[in-house]
Length: 133
Image (tube, rainbow, N blue to C red; front, side, top):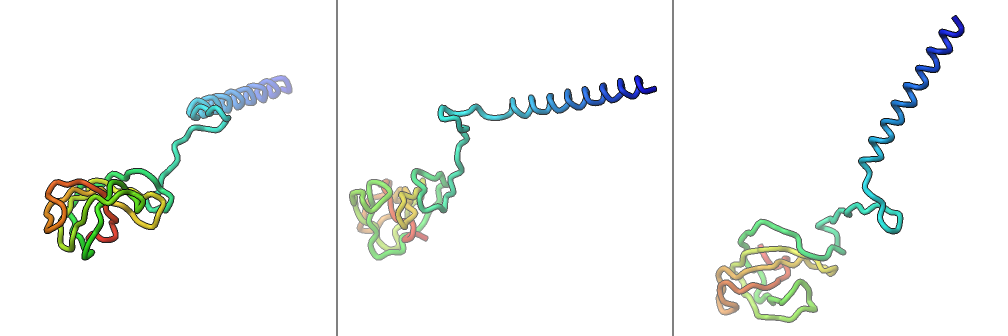
């Protein structure tokens, strides 16, 4: 009886080790490859409301109105970019993209739909989204 119990215990331990080994192998095969510095190359999440976000944020095109008496249209997202022209209160723009450049504003890449005395229809540039509704 002692031999039978010993054999049964050995088989049970072997099955447990084999099962755990199989789980370890399948889990390890699902892991991403380590990068050159030993870390994992997992893309980081970019929070669209983070003030340090840089680069474009894709949006569904929508039409907005200018709320400022005069709004500078720039060559890129940021106050350090060149001014290309002006839009005025009530002018309509189509928002193509949005971006943050690390400053206080969310910037909208816009195309002029209907302008007054400012830029002509179809003109594309960047404006501070704060002044659009």
